[in-house]
Image (cartoon, rainbow, N blue to C red; front, side, top):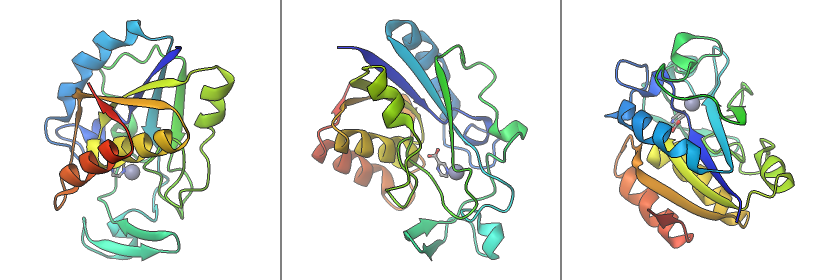
Length: 196
Ligand code: VGL
Ligand code: ZN
């Protein structure tokens, strides 16, 4: 079965020294680079927010990592990160970017997009489902950052859309906000996501 590697958000702001650093985030780069040749397609995603994005705590005068309610539900407020065209939004400099598709998400000012498939209202599509289906890529391996947010949401949506989904855990790292890592692993397991 045609297999795609989906590399989620391996960007400077999610690596040590970045605005929203995931602990040990840069440790995913070497294993991901090594995996790339073993797939029929490689897709990389990039978190890509305009300045003043509604997911930024600073936009609301709120504390970073606090919660707010958006029209589409609960939303964590993050430090400013992955601003379009900024060094923080660039891929980690050692990441191979010779994949087939680079998909940007989170560019609408009023809505966040953790998942590579749907924005946080869970209905606005990014277009990735159409790309994968029209290329006949039915088997997905997810890697990247962060395990409990963008990787988790992407895996759950992919499973819901009918893909065979697995996570290469050695090539993922999480943020772990109030037990979010354990909750994400349980949710993914319940959705039929395989851990390899
Ligand atoms: C992410 C928080 C905010 C992620 C993106 O890539 O997991 N997390 N934006
Ligand atoms: Zn973001």
